[in-house]
Image 1 (cartoon, rainbow, N blue to C red):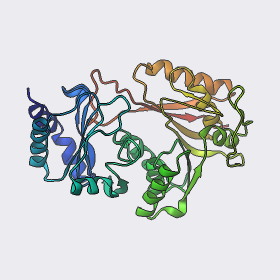
Image 2 (image 1 turned 60 degrees about the vertical axis):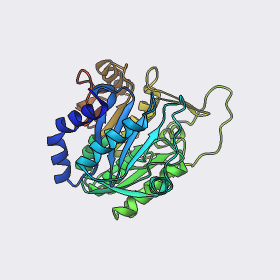
Image 3 (image 1 turned 30 degrees about the horizontal axis):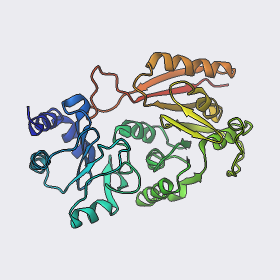
Amino acid sequence: MSNADLLRQAISQRSELLAAAQAANTNCFRVFHGTVEGIDGLTIDRYGDAWLIQSFHQSLTQEELDSLGDELRHTQDLPVIYNDRSNKNSRILNPLAPELDAFARDEQEMSENGIRFISKLRHEGQDPLLFLDMRVGREYVKAHSQDKSVLNLFSYTCGIGTAAAVGGADSVTNVDFSSFALAAGRRNAELNGVSDKCEFIQSDAFPAMRQLAGMKVGGRRNQKLPSYPKLAPRQFDLVFLDPPRFAKSPFGTVDLINDYQSLFKPAMLATKAGGTIVCCNNVAKVERQDWLDALIRCVEKQGQSVASHQWIHCHKDFPSFDGNHPLKIVTLTLAED
């Protein structure tokens, strides 16, 4: 099958999902998940008033790009932006025509379940400012935040925090190291009229979590600790933990394969008794039951227990080979004192 045939098939298989998205005032979603749907490393997404094609393994020819663009415009006549990220560092290789380039670099707006978010299809980072596969996480948080205090760790552009505030949270604390990401988060809060509910803390997550949990702030061996915002101990009704796969800082190492507990423990201790912590792990080779068992053991080592847990599964615009999506999301509700 040609690339255009595979895309047409993928769109057809999403007919119910796309109709539901339109009814829910959602115009950001994935229409082609190439790893599963026939073209490894190719993704095609709707981001508001544009289609975004991205190739991560092999560049598209102009003929391939034209055929895909024609198929997309047949579905919805919108500008088509192509980002060739086939180099190892995933930086964009291809230039765009001046008018398209200006459009891709300008702030755009999109809607997900009626919540407004900004996007940029080309900027200094490597994605358009909202991870579409986390839609189900934003839906969960929106539905479970009424009258609650919410802590959003590794918040990036604060999509989770914005959803919580729109869902009626009393307060939302977003923590991320990136000033660029938090600036986008502030814009998202402004767009939805919830700025008064949202706090934005620019900090390495390790010292922020440890201080909120009442733990001592430490660092990696022989590392001099830089300055960081000082925070008082505090617990939250709902904590969202969505770390990157791997990162190092003077304060610690984020390693979702070998040491998720170093992140989970302080996040869990910053969760009130009877509260809920939502944990995310996007490493495909991590086995979900083993990971859940490790989380439960960590809770029990702190003298607490898990009253209930719930798996949250990605929507069908992100299919997987075996029904087990690489992104794993589980909620743990802690037992009351």
